Length: 404
Image (cartoon, helix red, strand yellow):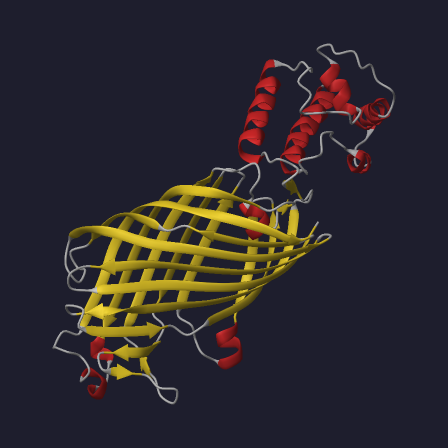
């Protein structure tokens, strides 16, 4: 009996996991492949335990009593007729609690109107991905009398990624270093979570790359010549999350995670919160003497170091312009409070914070194959009586993958 109930318990929790990730239209628990697995495992046993498993499997495939008594759930489970959404079934108290928690979580965080959004029915994804990133820095310093403009080199990478549900593992190769020998001194880390109602995203980047100086005071780069500036250091961190109001008709996951299908065009208002940290240090002592002549005074060190606390508001829209094709645009500007630190350009201050984030996606699904072109642009604007400085980050990625 102990072995029998151990198998029942294992099957019960396996069924919960399968229902969590199955297509929204699925309602029954199919364990056809599990019979073969258990038979294979029983071959390693001997004596009474092996006989118990064979008896259990034999009873599993025989007709069963469908009377809705307290033992029905066990009979339905072992005969592959378990329906987690059947509310007429009676369970023991602990299992009943697990079932109710699952139903609440599934409806609250994973419910869609199936005429607009459906699941893919697959848990695994294999992807090939190409990333292309660049930072830009523009503004006016020193009573806004000295214009400045810089951009980082394009950082290109290529790699593979394997994902199961919300967990993914991947490896990216630095193409700059591989193809040109140019060492890119950047660290980047990102993580995101998406369900029907909410999206959460966190990121971190640190860079000491040389940048191209396009503008400094009266200096302007030309098509034949631009100055390489080695004195910039940048570090930023962010955490943001927002609520999707029209969450039954609109899916961010269909556009950016390849885990849903958007059947019909739909959009949604979006609102949330954002926390971010910026540290940008420019040391113009790294300029040669000719370039330092474009500075309007003797000041050579400019550091913008601050933390933002913002309210986000915006809109996302997914346009299904042809069967299997999807175009999405999501815009989320933010406004709130900014605290600059004592070692920042103007010392410790309380300021107004403004930033933005724009996401674009073009997705094509063909059976279990999928293809995506994504673009993200995010920026933060520092503005005071003395300085106006805008830092933005841009990323374009191409993805091809297979669901299984």
